[in-house]
Image 1 (cartoon, helix red, strand yellow):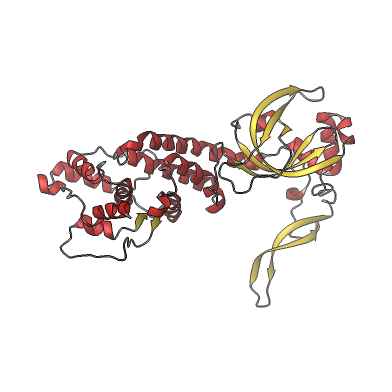
Image 2 (image 1 turned 90 degrees about the vertical axis):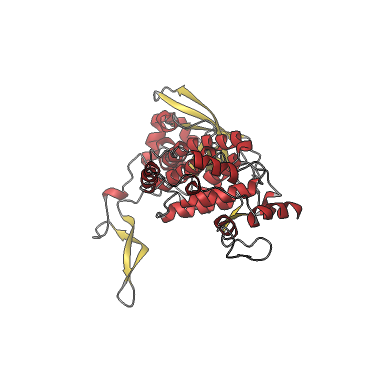
Length: 409
């Protein structure tokens, strides 16, 4: 309660902040600078924070004095940051609100100790502090340390992928750039100088995340690759024989009419290939992504030899794994394959550790498929284990970044 009252003091009676107009009045040069700033959205690719004027420096020293609790400083900064950016993109606004919420910042009317006590004689800063729409939950900060890097790691991994449902490249890039923009501004305005190293670490992680998230999205589309798919279509029940009758039937989504004559999207039908709605080329086994049993058999024989066909399935498990090493191996049948070693891995903060006796798995890939995959990248996948010690990665559920973390529930 004492801490809350201390923070309340700065809301009800903050230190007076000198305005630039109170000093010398706005100059022509300053007016031109402000006009140029107003033309920017703050999200331009080459955007740089404007140089801080002497008047702004004096204002920041008052607003973000180390004598003021960090909660109050961050609330003040977020208000100013929102005003200096244009929020005409709904996706960006939603992502920023989610990022703040993860860090303990609520968006909504601020009441503190039981309601607003606005007075017409209050100055602008008092009124702004009491009516802020972004405020930090004090009880949450009692449970966690101040850690900007942790918030970035969680937000740009588990929070973004599973809670925000972000999967498109443009939104993945937007999220990481948004966090970079915010943290650069925190550093530029010296809001929390006592945590500068941690904020810089968070910024470096957000820069790293921009590349990793896009790369992982591409990996999720290309994996598991031709060899693993061929093994799946030959050994795994869910895939075995799936494309053997492709010349007779095709699964095709076409609109179906309702009783009122309107059309609903998304009814799944099985139609003969002579149907006008079928697409013969798009639904043929191609021996690369889709294999008939004979195509799978031929591909496995070509790459691993005919002995590989004699194996039996001995086990299947869903696992989350971490890439530990990659090694090129040379076989007689083909030039090279990549032997990737993965360790069974539980994400930091997970509430659901894996119940398995497996410690590690080894998978054979085409080298070009994962040559650019960073070590410690994580995969959620279904694995099928054969009697000849070959492991099949038959279904890839997710490719997760090296910094992936979860929040313990």
